[in-house]
Length: 356
Image (cartoon, rainbow, N blue to C red; front, side):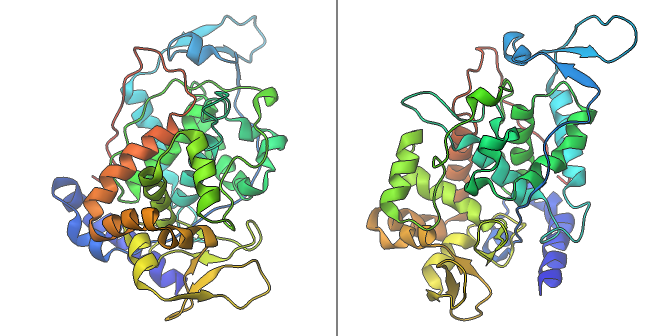
């Protein structure tokens, strides 16, 4: 079934993207199916460049670097333009499906998860955490339970970092998330560069990311700390339309939807319309759909329909995919920019999907 779903989703993306780019994609969104992912890997770079920490921010988006050579090296400044970031976007997009045997055939979902988890550590009271720093490169944060499997996403991006050494890891991880959402037929996600990589001292403590085993009170505590409201919490949860859980990483197992590599509002529809029962297995508590037993939901997912305020937004997004896309785009941009000290000149960029 996994290979059938993968082939179906891929065919939809490659054969219908131009029509969706030119006209509303409502017809597909209402019937689309997806595919999921997440993984593990190594950190570190094979790049031949040695970077000066914080240079991108100090130079207003420019990058200061030295070359490794026998002769004395002189620092150079490279100021990337829109077309340079589009080139990075295109490179990421070209590699998303390079390994057919990876999960459901795409690295897109795990790259979205990397960008999400790199950003979701933000604390509005202390100003710590967020996407500015890429501190998951270091063991204290990379080994947190919530980040299990994300070394696969970081490893995936290493060849791209080597090819475009001027971009910070922080900007690259977020750009990879933006690219993945758009390439998986999601909405346009405006992007601003300007994040600088930080060292191990900036790692955040464990426990800042959502715990899937918890309920609505926990969700509010976690997301209110970042500065989100109830509507934004539910809109962000729509990212669970993508990817799957792995028993050897999070402990949970299975996808949330039938089409984990295409973004639609199916997550909300399934939450409301399927009958969910506890899965009988040796793993942690999770739900399975009663009709096929092939999908799963986590306790934190079911909390969205057990809480009246959350449920009202679930119902709105289940009924209107365009509204979901609009609100998801806005809130994911907010998430991806938490804790980033952008310069006044930092422009928002909108990238063209490669299949548009």
